[in-house]
Length: 228
Image 1: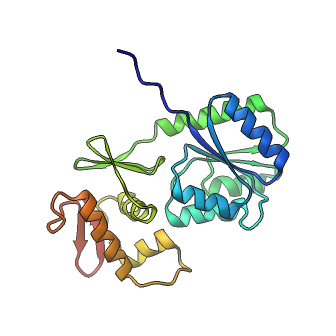
Image 2: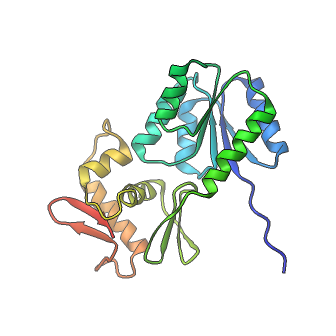
Image 3: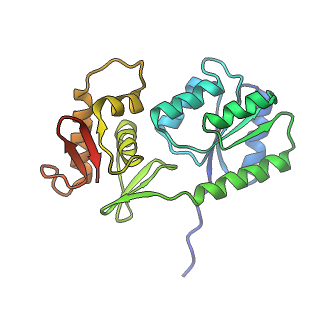
């Protein structure tokens, strides 16, 4: 019996220079990766919210939302995705800032294609070794942003996943509705905490065996919710 072929790693290239973007796309595709591109940070953010990626290759100087701002947004939203910064900004301050904001690697332009590919392979190897969160029969893959029960995928919206992952990251610790709200939507978003209750009810209907008597997504009276 043959072993199923592994799906190619999915890489999002965020670069506004057309020639560099084309070069990256061709070089990565030649290595067998599935490559998608984005011309600015705002488009990239939406694509990261909607689709699981194995790696994001990110320029810093981008229109609408620069690379540092995009990394900050991902941190606020609790979205975990490996990011490699690829930028002409090569000062130590830039590298430290990018890494402190959550990038896994920082490569300065101009760069050599062999070195880039070696670093891509290294990031993907680390990604494969990242442990997944589990509770009961449920498994959460934070990198692919997928949730499975006994190996079978469960369809969650991006917001449902973000709320679940916010709770999974602090497994066992109660999170207030305010902290969940800020982790998912950010401090500048205007809304009511009742929104959290509605999304948790939706999660329970998809994840709990008995949504009326949840065993994992537990209400903590006077505080918020806890994942057990």
